[in-house]
Image 1 (tube, rainbow, N blue to C red):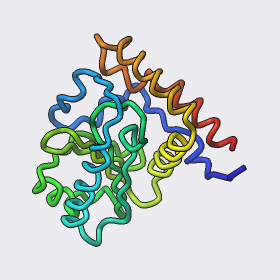
Image 2: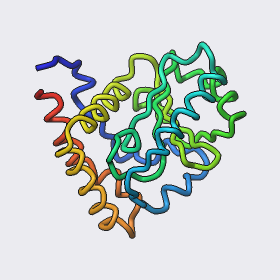
Image 3: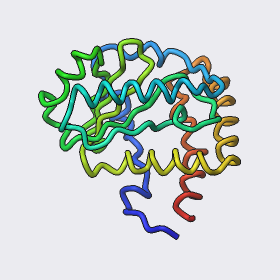
Image 4: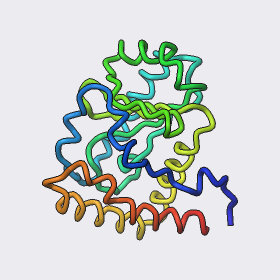
Length: 196
């Protein structure tokens, strides 16, 4: 069994005061409804193109760029929005990276210092969620573990897809509840990951 640091094993859950407190400006249109689509191989190509542009714009600031989330798992149904984890040395000094991202058309939508310094930006078409993390943050590690597990465990991949489709229907009138509604199945899968 692999050993993981405690901050990787234990998922962060925002307090009621923190939920929504980090919103900067208008929320993305993609938050207004949840549409789950069959896997599209073009999602991988969209990531490769975005990674190239990001690394070109940020150069030596980039420590890592990873395709994460459901669109990074071949065969997994997902919302058609590519999630990217961008790791840099420090997210607190936004003047070092935010202007370059804004020149690319990205728009800051979340600033969550309480969640390991997380920042989230959306692409101009709102088809990419760019998550910016400081070096050493546990969440990008968790994202990679989850992605890699689903890539190699088809039963959990299918369980997750089925749950997401059901929750998208169940929360159709309350799309803001969708992400939190997935916590139970996500926690179950993480329990298997950390027990392996």
